[in-house]
Length: 402
Image (cartoon, rainbow, N blue to C red):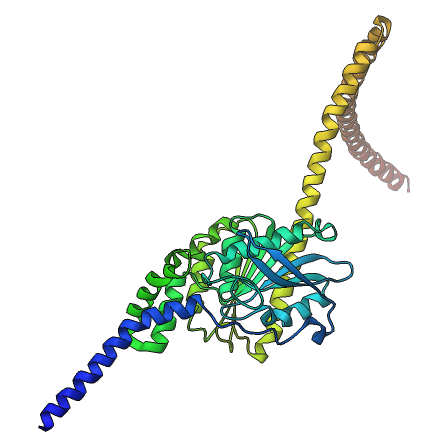
């Protein structure tokens, strides 16, 4: 009797575990594509920042909400992208610091998050259309048209920035914090932290079931395959040392795949999408320095293009002026020009021949001086030799007389 009860209990637990294992991928896929909407709990005015509330369209037509934080004498524009699941309030701390340094900041909500439209999240697959819609909005404003645009993202936002910038050169630099190399790897690590050994099975099944609600294949969301197309634009990768979802090894893989300048900053006390208070100063210095380098590189590139364009424009105009002057000149003027060109060419060769003649004269004068010095030394020696015997004979004659 006891054995029957024990067997029934074990069977019940196995059935429950099987049901959980069967339902876990479905539950994980649904929660990933339908994140809870987090309300906007903070405003830029709480930090003393001026802002403008905007509604714009993504590339696929969804209405998205955002804040534009302007500043006086701006250096550049930084688009700030939040993670999953969150909203634009997640990056307000960085907007406050960038505003002090002269950067215009634009914060917005991805689809299905905050106040933006959308039926399902694609965890980075179609969110690139949201970021590109924000870039279209900023590029179309007259006061921001000539400013370089950079992007910053946390977690999923960082992956979106890397993938979007790979296809749009208007984004002059990307800084990502906690970006995964592949979405499949991040989901598997998160599932392993929740479910232990069953994590890999649940993660693969959840990614396969994702297209039921999301109109995209989540298994192909790979910033690792896109980061190589950002060169020569700079990239900054920040990662927490205790990040278990997108560990520092993912940042190293992204760095090795990047063909341009790519720096990795490891925050010693931070985790995934969370910066420890003791690491905020280092993160701030790294990000502000990176965006300042992006602005400097953009300005130097524009200066080079302007100089090359001016030289190219001046070249044809100068040729046209000389052709017109030759066509309108008279035969006598042409003869005068030819005589002038002949004299100028002969005059140009005259200094060379004159230099050779002067060099020869200098060599000759030196030889003459050397010969003269040698003759003087010989004459002095001969005089000394003749004067010594004469003085000795004079002494002998004087002594004989005495």
